[in-house]
Image 1 (cartoon, rainbow, N blue to C red):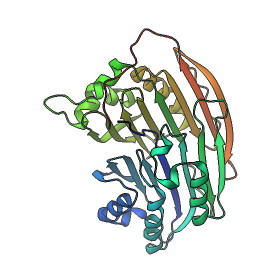
Image 2: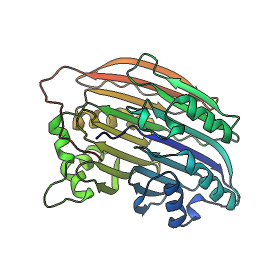
Image 3: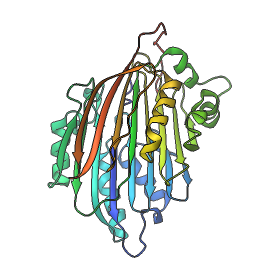
Length: 323
């Protein structure tokens, strides 16, 4: 049995009018939105700047003027778009920008029909947003990154760091396999070193440990009011870890180094998206193999870098399991 750990990411920003907020909607309303995509809300926490939801397939973050839905597996993200737009419309909030993105899927044939190919996705999105634009980065990299964007009003800059890690060694994966007695998500994150890994930059606020293995963690950055989230899939022959943070670019190099020291992946892809130029990233024990830059939404620079780890004697075959 295999699991598609590569996530679909949907970010929708809205123009706020008269104090309107997407956070004003009930938890049950967001449960319905998530259900439309084929996922389930497992838990919910409220922070000063956003509401965070741990899902059966990744996470949802709701800010006053922004919604970020991240889902893995065979979810149908496009089915959630209508529900989000209806909630915004009920609050008299207009869509300003939309960005849907993902890396190449490992198992595209297992996806729902609208996600089985880029052409299928483009046709589905074009029906909803005929004024959208398509971008691809990573032509010389192991997996390409694809984005569909639509800009209708002015956007808010949200500096994004995303780190995608593959080929996690067995000793690192072992920390994310359920024990007996069963451990909580918070305990798994602490014991595995996740909390310590990000402690200089943020704190965890919610976590869920999956059975037989896997972990999802939502967190808040110390500065800037943004979220961070981590998803670990220690599946045999397809181990994968994703991390993202809405964080000041000055924190990006330190976060990347801490994550790679914890997970020791064989291959890494680092995505940065900000109006400011990305910081230089020299990562010990890793060699940058490719870099490519582009522009989203007319003027938003995005950079994609790939790194490969130096050869080691680690056994990179984790125990079989799915998140």
